[in-house]
Length: 264
Image (cartoon, rainbow, N blue to C red; front, side, top):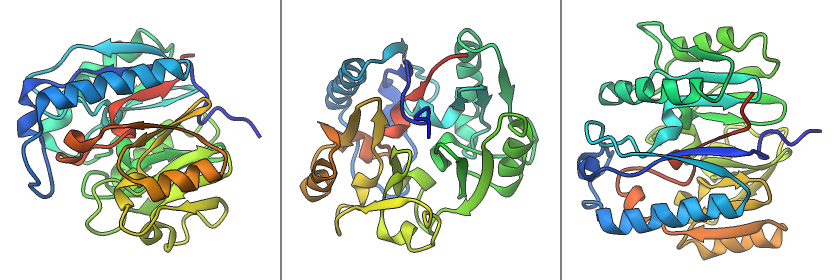
């Protein structure tokens, strides 16, 4: 089995803007500290580079408070990129800003364009055999169906699932660790969606650690969740911990902060 779902050459990130303090959040747990977020973001970029990434760092977009979370704007696959249509109206412009960046890197860039279609990258988990898409408050059935149509010639099938109630994105609760292994919360794994995968469960009380990323030989993991970190280390993964306290205040995690891919 190949490893194209976690071995990449490039990553796109965007620096946080001062407007991040107005970022969307399900529950108000405090205002993000911009200076601390910038330090964490710099650590994140350094970790990507250490893992072998050529990192394309985009400037802040003050008009879009959530624009640091670039993952929601696009799906990047070996065959091409698909520009998303975010379910939060305030984020639609972020996808438009990302389109020319990816057009400069990919020969094929498609777009979710249906007026009734909404889909965000945070709801999409790409594995070696399939593309799992969780319907959520930000991703609807029309968006999933349009993605399936657009990517029908690219090979991996799209499997529609449901994000647990009260969870922002499908990948809030899971991450791909390798071709056969997923890190997941119990509440998501209990649905049976990972029945064909090996599941590493996050420790009870550490559900926020489920969102991590595998980039080449490194796992970028949010700091502050020692029991789940130890489970990954014991399973043989090379874990790099990165502060995420400020992004977490606006419902962001490790995967949200980058697009990871090998251009074609």
